[in-house]
Length: 215
Image (cartoon, rainbow, N blue to C red; front, top):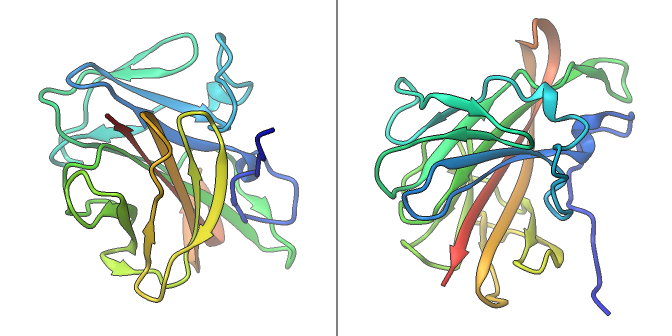
């Protein structure tokens, strides 16, 4: 029997949809990218996750955030046609309303996502980056610097999920568990005043995912 573990999204003890949801991208070759909001260890409903309507305008790009791809809304995902077969990324800081943490101060969530492991560069504030193109070792980076001891959740093609910790250089080796799509996720909370979803917050929880297909 498979052992299932919930992804480690340690966002807040307070109830919040953001605590159980992630944004991720799936892409097959040169096909359009598909953007999802939901719980990646579960199958996406045909009509979309109940929170899917809150995913409105993610910024998806290939080379530069200044050149976002046009979006087309489907029943359970958002589609974006991107030329070529390289890695694609997105940012969205306007999905869920801020919520009160245990200290009573407002927190907000910023989602980052990437599909593909052909590039070793980073282009997101919080990103899971392969150490080598096509490799199985990854670094968790915050604005280009390693996050030692970062919590990482690995979901394999059979949706078996395991949580692990990065080493003191922010590096995690992902075991190969067969062919298909893998999803990695991590979070990083940053304190400091900013505005998210139109409201001032005292801290931002950054959630980042990476998907890739193992041949």
